Length: 495
Ligand code: NCW
Image 1 (tube, rainbow, N blue to C red):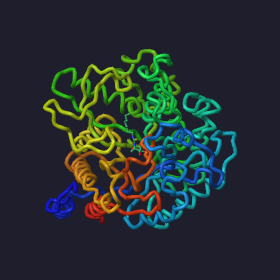
Image 2 (cartoon, protein in one colour):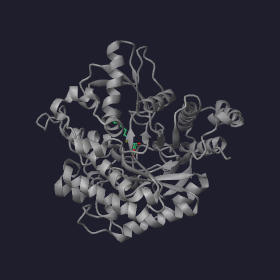
Image 3 (cartoon, rainbow, N blue to C red):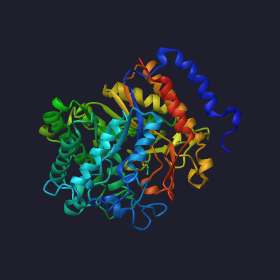
């Protein structure tokens, strides 16, 4: 087995937790929000139920070769039917909050501002929010977690059509604010736009599967689409926020912002070109969205690399975009060692590796190739974001997929010591960033409440702190759930 009993991570953690708990400076701030996160398409299933329209992931997942195991979202963790059980599970963990996303095509099956609204979809999320609140759990709601209505992709190319998508997304957001805003205090507009742009319109590995990767598609459109899609996503996000602030904020009193994926970047070594490469990696992954939203410009290095393929906003658009987030929403998983001289434009011509110059690995390898366990990177990223953007940070995702977990029997899979090791590191980094470094961090949502449909990985990669048996849909709390619940209980400021 992966972890011998004497240095069982839970033993280590309870020792250090007891010490921490005695010192008030090692507590989380008052009103700190913690809970677990999911996304509609990854858990709901019931694809054809109660008037739901198709999203771009429905058919995409069924195309040969698009998911590793041929899995799709038709059933997923069956959470559209098992929603009450899922809320009971959350309540059994004692969470303060639950981060989930709304399926746009349940609310507006064809997606557009002139298309019919599906009352059954609205009712589902409304009763869901009521049930959460009845258990004392605050809803933390994502409007868009990658499941664009297929109708909008077919009608006008989805995120590629600026005027249409900005209006349609804002209309969808309005319907959600109207229906749920009296009870929802935290809204996220868009989850990880980098993935929609690069994975969905660059590498073609996510829906809608458009590839303008020059190496894959030399006859293609020279890698213009990701930059255009990102540009439109930023504008759509900003207009939804403007609407909320203009029409709802004074009565509903919520916070609204975007959530960005981005991992810490370390220079491969101390050469000036690799030190620069680490900053270039951050520019292409994080600054691409965060600089416009918080600072009001695109990273100059992106313009240098992409030239006139990099779009720009008009003055009027910039006035909507700049300052369009009440907080910094952070999804982060790992750290990359960065080397200059790469040829991947999507990464700013920076090469990523986890192997140090001396041949050692940065951290423990996860099931997916892009993830190793390196908690100090989390702390450094929190500090970088805090210094650069000066916004309160909501950590909206962070987690680990244990290698080979899908091939283990459930009894073994729930002993997820590699995931516990990861969370031991990240929770300590979180606390140090708050109490030692003075970073203003307001939430922490481990990804994910449940094992679920992991996009292009299908069901082969498990991120859950709860094991799901996909045959029976039975849920089994993993050891990492126990670790996290205990950790939060011990570190909450209960005053
Ligand atoms: S794939 C991904 N994830 C996972 C997903 O389950 C969740 O919905 C997302 O918000 C866990 O958290 C996010 N993120 C993409 C990470 C970048 C992968 C880089 C691949 C290079 C080809």
